[in-house]
Image 1: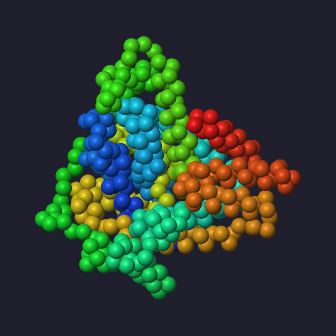
Image 2: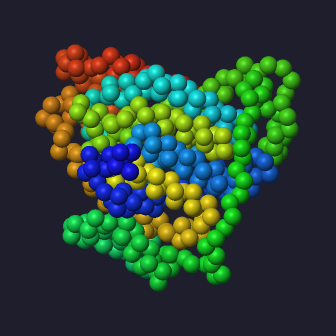
Length: 466
């Protein structure tokens, strides 16, 4: 165990890794319910076959998350868990399939090819070079921005933060009419008390206690005839559609059902496919980079030069996870910022990822048990980890305007655009602009210049497309 995961070198123990792995799983286990609902279009009245079934996607979610997280454990030895990414699954369903009229099998093909390209880029160190080219101030700002970002996720998941208060954003009243919010705040108080008392399992214990507190409030719901054991459904193995890249689909004008392919070569179909492909590619790349930057900052998982430990292997893992996810029938798999909650609970090595992966495998058979943990119980963990990640803000030099202003824009944009990739994008653009205006052009790495031009081109493309 010591030789494989280097526990002593990273100042951790087996018990800390187990607690960290469980905490990460509980903090991100919501994806087991959320991803199938989004990919299957749960609640939408659609003809059969327009989207995959809920059960098939649930199995795909658990399998792809477990496989990718295990690869992260043994290839990169990092306490980072992976699962189908939020945002990309919504893009998959609502923009690509329902909005653009593309078969879900063709969308899955775009995910597969994106993952394969990422494997190539990772093997040749191109993605790693991009990470290393990001200025230190932007890296730190990403960690701080991620702290705010996951705090917003926690506040939103618990129903504490809402736009129903008559203002753009606000907090609800903590009463029995908002029982989820009330239980979450109680859980946050418990977590803070445990952490101040230096309890090593503060976050995990907080989740467990909050789940129990939620029972009398009706937040934690135990159904009648509760049966903890369930058999997994079969996922959609290798459900790809390569023909659709070259031929336009013939869809029923009333139902949108797939009728076949129109005869002949379609340049429009190719163009549409590459728009889908590059959207998946761009967002996946920078969401993953942002997550790795944030988690490594939180756990001080850096080498002597201040770079992410085993960065190349971590990025390769993300690419492998995306290919594996596509092969079992789900959208882009990426690293999860909720891993920071496990790091905050003490996780420092891949052993924690092994624990998380095992729990994803077990979830296939005990779906009902894991579904008992409500969002109000995991929200306090996310909100509190937001504080832990915000602490990095003291490393930023706001007196240097060419460093402080881009850092501020990164933090602000990442948190309030609800997008890691947009935070990095605007942070890089503002960094180049600030350095040019401040006559410090020599501080800008070549790859940072290239990224800035790519990001600007993407902004122009999106503006023209709309």
